[in-house]
Image (tube, one colour):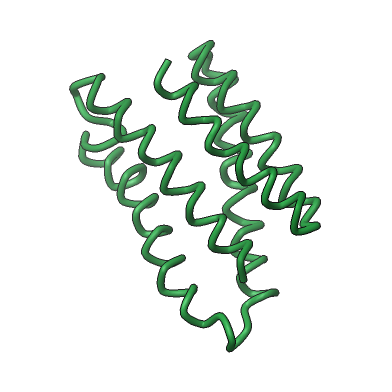
Length: 131
């Protein structure tokens, strides 16, 4: 249930993208919100794969957005974006390889870290949209 609730943080990115007229970014985040909720309710492997593909779409589009919209006036956001991006990589990929964080052997701790991953990723993309 925790991960379903933290998935709603992703909806704030949909709102932010829509208000900033980044309609494709907003659409991808709307899709991610839905796939994340479905994935965390059903725990079905196909739902998980679909969710992961949308996560990759968000990441790739976020990188494109940084390259396209970064200006010298907002250079200070780039180190913050890199810190948050590094946090997501550590929480998910490093954790997967070492049975830590989102993949901790304690399922409650793993869910807490995964919920934190939702918040960190959402924050990173809010910063990207602010470029």
